[in-house]
Amino acid sequence: ALMVGAARTTEENSMSTVLTKSALQSRSNLELQNLLRKAHYDLACSLTGSEERRDALSMIDNITAVMRQRTLCPRPPGF
Image (cartoon, rainbow, N blue to C red; front, side, top):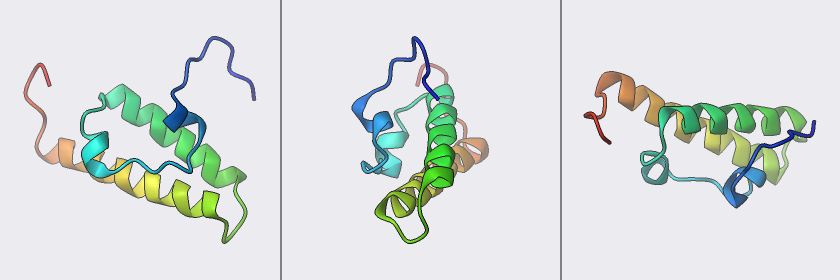
């Protein structure tokens, strides 16, 4: 589905780029939610055993780990 007016970075256009946990920590909660939504979409569109599926699963794992970490130890205001 085409998203009108939605600006995406190169990383978000291609899940072949798997963002590390440390790279994801600098993202806002809203950005993490959007990346997680995109990773789930990419997972649903991927073929079993494909590189795209592996990358989507890795992104989901990394994003949920960062989100879980923030729940246990929230970032101070301004970060």
